[in-house]
Image (cartoon, rainbow, N blue to C red):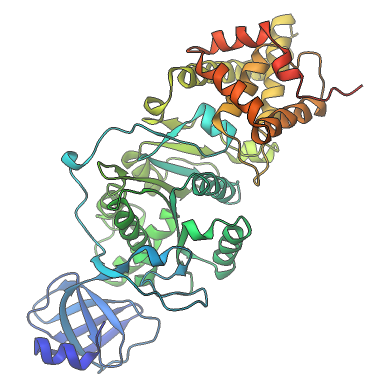
Length: 487
């Protein structure tokens, strides 16, 4: 932006700060100011008009430096805009797109408004392409698609961040533009995400838009809007974009703080009445479009596994499903701690192949049966051969789904492992040897081109999961030849 004197000469209106309440300034003067207009103070700080009454206007402060009562204010006659362009990739920026990674200033950008009208139906199309997270349990039981808006919900410290970084690593490796929006978190958490991307050598395909808990409430509130605006700029160039909003419960808390300070009438849980509109207008900007796609994973934090909170249920209503990280699963040692029976994907299945849909149906049905039988045994019932078979297969599936946060597994490798389990490849193998042999099989698929081609052709030739299982039963050597059996 240009300086205060330029806008004062251009617009010809001057105001004075009468009162400051934390992140809100009350200014008299500026009779022609309009909502969402950017104003600039004589000391260089900026703000955005929140509301207007007859006596004065209400301004949300967006600068880290304090503003003093009595300071002069000038209108800019402009809506809030941020710089966008390909040069922002590989950087860590604040909501004003100022670099905070210690690097050079960002150049070769152009400015676009931060708050835009979401695309209507005309500019959209059905989701068509699957989005592989690299996390076996999610890709098989709760599949996602490019252009989907999915809620990631769970208690604090249940593995949500590890899942998000795994998905980001998987998508960056496939050429997707990845944007991670960190909303009002600690500086050390921002640093950890940056170090992960650098360590995995994918930073050049990624961007982190971050605000810390020490930033003004206005800047924290703007964080997801800046990230979504940059995502839209890449979408309009034909790119597929993967966007993480971490997290929107924190975003809602800061918006509640702003609204209460501005003396808005509080609603449920003291949140303002327009909180649903604020989040829905943001989330609706993601989707699958004719030029490109924006896949949005919005994160929400629950307390003691309660999914019925106000913000959580709001976000469920405006997304295409949710992935639940269950605190009980986490305490049982499951990694990731995703509860497949309580997780939902509303559009992910339509981007799958017929075989993938068949695998998902078979696996989901089995997991429900497995859980029922485990609960049945809690009452001291004796297990027959059928129940023992289900429990043994379920235990092997649990072993496979227990995945390290640093590994990603492609969808075909997941499918062939599932088919091998159903075909009885590991019926005679016990304990940790099962996990070791599965890992050997996955490694062979990832490193040996001939083996990978054979597996891919076998999968492509099968339209149903049952036919793939039968093919493996008839030719078990295609899998066992890649595994070292322990004596």
